[in-house]
Amino acid sequence: MSSSQCFQNPPNLNSGIHGAGTIQELAGLSSYVTGSPDSKLALILISDIFGYEAPNLRKLADKVAASGFLVVVPDLLYGDYADFHNPKFDRESWRKAHGKDKACEDTQPLIADLKSKGVKSIGAAGFCWGGGVAIKLAISSDIQAAVILHPGPISDDEINEAKVPIAILGAEIDHLFPPERLKQVEEKLSTKSEFESFVKLFPGVTHGWTVRYNDDDEAAVKSAKEAHQDMLNWFVKHVK
Image 1: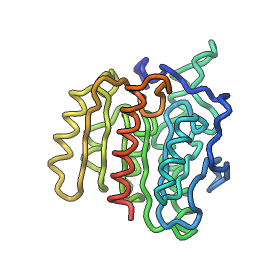
Image 2: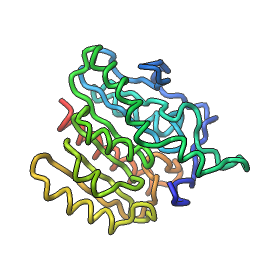
Image 3: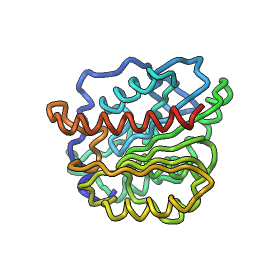
Image 4: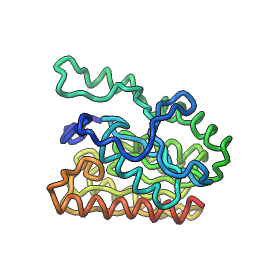
């Protein structure tokens, strides 16, 4: 979260776009829930630092749910979203308060709750900060597949310890996870024969583009939609 790109183009949480789903409390987490409640296949979408209310994230959840998944977007930040318009906002204190290990732990009861309701297979996608949570879930084996989009820092140890099929979608213009780091991760994943992996670099886009694109930027929207489809294809293949 040290890169200034994390903070660019924050979502408008007062846009009036609330999505087709509903807000429910699941395992103590306020969550945006969309899709068939009877589905045996669930996806957990983990937000970036701007939280689960982001309109583009909810639109993506609705789109993915249309393919037959129950989709849950939990508020793992507990309403404490990054607010760079607030002069008193302390980035370092916020980062310490929202560790990815704790977020992963807080997701465990949600996974258990979904399974208690008949869900048989679960995938997790994480965006920027959420990508760091998704990789930890991939290590835990509580999910069947993971997709990480324009990730924050991911260590070699985390890559080596992953246990489920994992896809990583990166931006060409990304100081936090630059193309050379994406290539390193791709090479590490390629040596793991026990599960499938997929790594893709999207040219001409910046960190955060899949959920923080502007609707009037046709190229960014097209690239975001391509990434969304790649994510969906991965889950259709591995969450079943």
